[in-house]
Image (cartoon, rainbow, N blue to C red; front, side, top):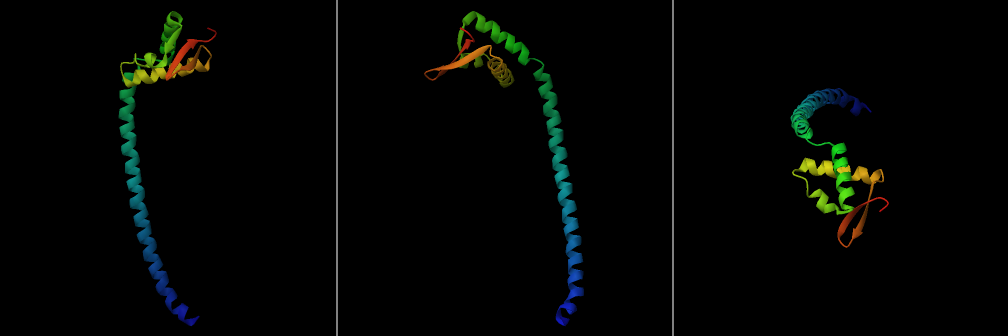
Length: 124
């Protein structure tokens, strides 16, 4: 017991130094995390601005109407053919979302014919 009490003050001193080092390390770590967060936030802001500019060209609602019109003329359409009409990745995404929404609301149905997915009007 006496031996432990001899070392206790030294331990407290070491613990205080370790705590100060840990605090400093934590401050640096949190500072770096904050920097990373701000950098990524700035990058996302730039991407969002670019996306908004590009995004004004297409809307899911317009693509839904376009698909409805196309389906009313063709009755049966391979999904791949529909998707290949996209001029860029954003349009591809919007066409795909419009397609999913039309399936969800029951306007079109999808079935397989071999390796091909075929779209048809619901009820035909």
